[in-house]
Image (tube, rainbow, N blue to C red; front, side, top):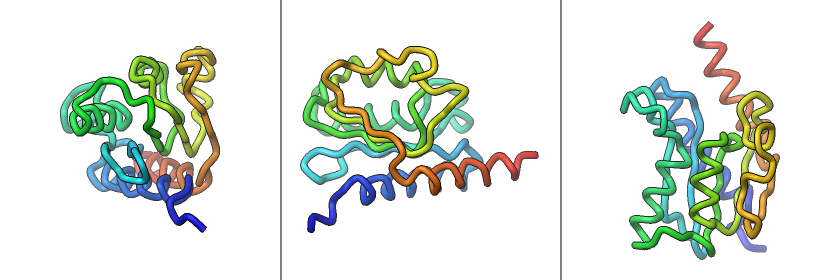
Length: 146
């Protein structure tokens, strides 16, 4: 059995989300994979950078593109702990990423609520991987804020 499956890589994204949690950022983490290798990592940095675009997916996209020296990520997969927002979905569309796997759904701000066709037509979309663990981390974060 291949140990490098969707759950394995989502757990890598969860490690990134924990970094955000520990830094007081909304705990969303992302990794981009090519050939079972992590080529980009990211977690929310919006507070630290005072930048509303510093989402986990954007950080991971930038890192992966820099690693490959290319803007298109057709053969790559993104694992992210929360459903991408419309902004991130748009960036992912332009990257032509091959697969997006997300954990928790975002009923309020997720791309599927606003623009279900925002993802690139060739991108495979998988939801719900480690959803409970991803959701629990977000709930713990926001409970601590109240």
